[in-house]
Amino acid sequence: MQWSKWLSQHESLYRIKGKRVYVGDGIKVGKEGRKMPGVKRLHQESEDVSKPEWIRGHYFNALTILVGVGKVCFALPLVLRLDDGIKSKSTPKEGKKGTKKEKTTLVTKMADLCVTYAEAGSYVILDAYFACEPVLKVFRQKALHLITRVRCSTVAYAPFCSVPTLKGRGRPRIWGSSINGTKIID
Image (cartoon, rainbow, N blue to C red; front, top):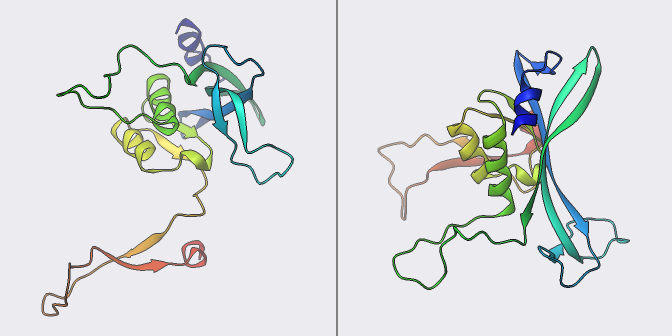
């Protein structure tokens, strides 16, 4: 915590519109040991056929802050945290009545990491893997700006304007027609 406080007061932080810029990503590190703490089976989402589909290892979330002078920038690490494979004692156990099981995923863990260490109003650059609803919800609540590319599975919709005189069968529509990606760019 002291390291991040010292870095946040540094005078040569890279800024966009006067706000700090953070960079975050998740890293999978393969391990050979079978009985190491936190080692679990991880899926690799890669188009490279030389990588195996499944590995045993650790999953880390990393958050850095951009520091630079002029056109040169460096990413100084704020935190590198083991986020998968170790269960905390504070999570409720399954099967007990009256306890609500929280759904924590790697995406929500990265969002929590960004909210904890990033200053409100700053910019966070993340991979497209993190461009999803849980991250956007938390970022909106904490006034953080997300810079990322959109996932290839994302669909944009035109606003739907209903005509009150036309009533069709079934549930009323909420969204308009889907927009092609080339129309968004134009």
